[in-house]
Length: 336
Ligand code: HEM
Ligand SMILES: *[C@@H]1O[C@H](CO)[C@@H](O)[C@H](O)[C@H]1NC(C)=O
Ligand SMILES: *[C@@H]1O[C@H](CO)[C@@H](O)[C@H](O)[C@H]1NC(C)=O
Ligand SMILES: *[C@@H]1O[C@H](CO)[C@@H](O)[C@H](O)[C@H]1NC(C)=O
Image 1 (tube, rainbow, N blue to C red):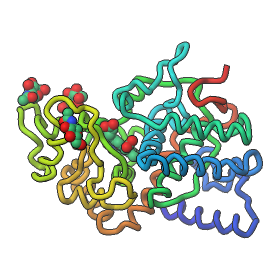
Image 2: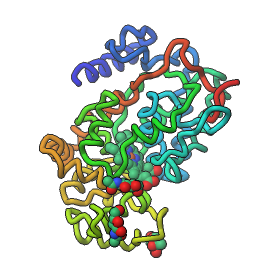
Image 3: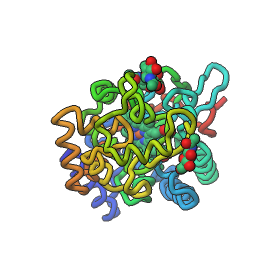
């Protein structure tokens, strides 16, 4: 924790003094693969600026897009690592991850990814990977909605494969138990602190009725709702999410401020007003977890710092580097 932060501070200092030694990968603290923030410094110096500007335009057009892009990065990283596998359409032997349970009728923002990629290809063809683009877009989405910023280690390359089963099996479902959710994180090398902090991204964006209906009507298969759900909130949700129909009807993941990246998600959990079962169990299942929820509810700075650190950690999951993989020209298909 302290090392990452110290590194970031030293890094910014070195850059501001024009002593930027960031192209030397040995400066990135070790153990993080070969990723480092200055990766495109000479090959595509405007890369970050281009990503930020296309994301900003897309979010100005539709505020929810920040949430949708952030989620794409998560769904990419949990399947074969952060390698852009999620972005591939079906073709030849590739079966798209877009059709998995977590993604089908749900993952969105692929058109914005195409726009970012087109802008990058225009500036520096064949240079910036789709996996890096998604990592940068996730950081920019945080900043644009009022959340923390951080330096993004770069240099990921794109996969030449996708994994539908990985998408179905690795990404947690909203009705998974606390233990299942935690083990899906620890399987990736992420811990309880990462789980709680990263779930805080549900401070922005929306969920479809299908993702939380079970809680409203039939939590345990005996025809009763989840009694821990705050009563008036539950009543409100039932109006938008009937026992059948309205599957795609949306509700805010954070009832207080779905467009603002803040710590109200954690305050909601303490009030039993988490939207998804997977949100509420972070407060109701284990002492260690509920302590983290309380800490982030009380101290937004603490949440922001941990969120940035955990996003960097998630972004570093099993990247393809060196001569592995490729730099896709089009994020939807492998190069021929
Ligand atoms: C801890 C386990 C998690 C579960 C079970 C989970 C589940 C879900 C579900 C069911 C939705 C609503 C999808 C829909 O109904 O269409 C959602 C939305 C979202 N998730 Fe998660 N999620 C988890 C963790 C994360 C993480 C780690 C991130 C990012 C770091 C994230 C970011 C988001 C965002 C931003 C949205 C809103 C997307 C939009 O409005 O388009 N989630 N999540
Ligand atoms: C979780 O939801 C899925 C999809 O709606 C359903 O098939 C499954 O039975 C649910 N699991 C539990 C434990 O309720
Ligand atoms: C609740 O779920 C159980 C198990 O999935 C199912 O058998 C039952 O019919 C459901 N009850 C209602 C009222 O929907
Ligand atoms: C979907 O939500 C709207 C309110 O946002 C509500 O008027 C409508 O009835 C809902 N649809 C269904 C099928 O419940």
